[in-house]
Image (cartoon, rainbow, N blue to C red; front, top):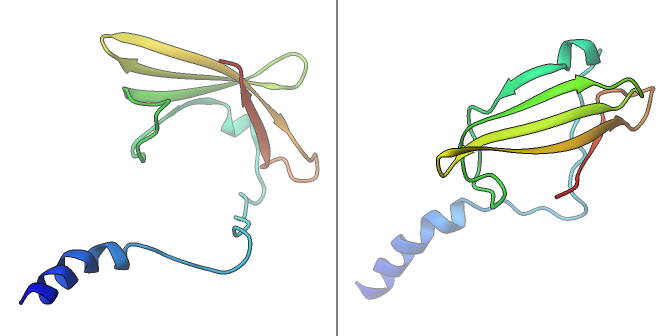
Length: 106
């Protein structure tokens, strides 16, 4: 009875893992990406826990700057206040504009 208890207790943990050999897979990007259609406000509808994003009503606003970079303004409602962090996104490869490099300075 005792070993069966432990097997039943640990089985969900084992089935929740995925293992693979080699480097991380390279995700595909949006074909025919149009940056102008991407700009604007995006609302987070689901997430995994993250230490830098503990609030609610999380959104990201993307706008084009005069120098061609993209202003990224992330906001959240946390502990009774709206908290924001600003970053910069750049198109890494003009032939593949869907790949953006994003940096934040905290």
